[in-house]
Length: 230
Image (tube, rainbow, N blue to C red; front, side, top):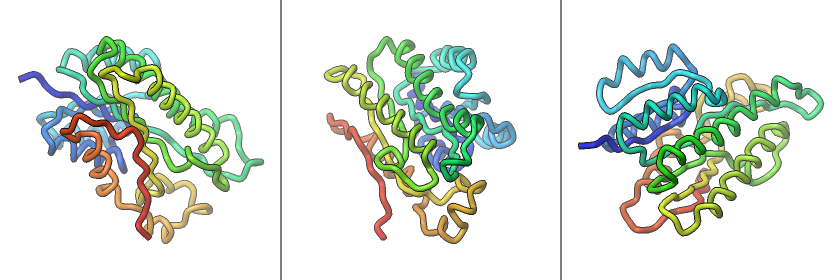
């Protein structure tokens, strides 16, 4: 039987890792793209079946082109989940070029990956799931550049929806609030460890996303906003 492939970016840690684990449990063949060499090496040793890791930078066009070509030979790509991204939380006057470049790599990767997968699938029979943030829906204190990136990702997502309306390509935007992961580890002046503990469980968020993306009905949930109950 041909592999039903789900591509997940940023799948070595946090929410991405939960998406990888739960997708494997659901019988999908997971292609995980992440640049964390040590974590990816551990995952390659853990998952012997229904898994293949690709180590590299999602903003590297040559790497993405070659990776999608290789994945296309492994089976039928059904779902692309663009999850990878890095934050930079600072007051407006402290941002520098490195912060901007780091934040915008997520947007670059989303566009490069979506483009290559669409070409590989001949623009048919595909779900593109763009995981952004509630920061794509509003401005936030100390998140000017991060919000700019996420608003750009939202604009790209909405444009894809219009471009493929009425086709077998379905585009889903996901907007989660704060998740209890190491995402904030370098921003303790903004998000304390105590505050982080009150954020959503990544297992619950991953389940919510996959339950909607993998539904068996002839319907598509086009936007998923995930918030804490309290």
